[in-house]
Image (cartoon, rainbow, N blue to C red; front, side, top):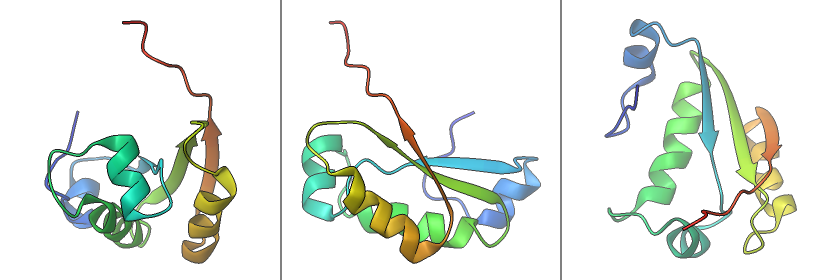
Length: 96
């Protein structure tokens, strides 16, 4: 199931979801826009907002793929600021 439009944590919890893993593959807006190429504006602060709101109700973790464009330690700093779990994922480039 994919949730869009930054649903409130209460809705996520109501849907029966008890754990959320958020892929945070950048440490600032400029890097996020370059790496993730979002279709909408202002997505980086919205992702951070979702993490902060969700961690209050649901087991939440931040994950980071080992992409060469982003320093893992800088993303880890964000994790330390919000005090939630952090997990590094292996980056697997597309085959096409």
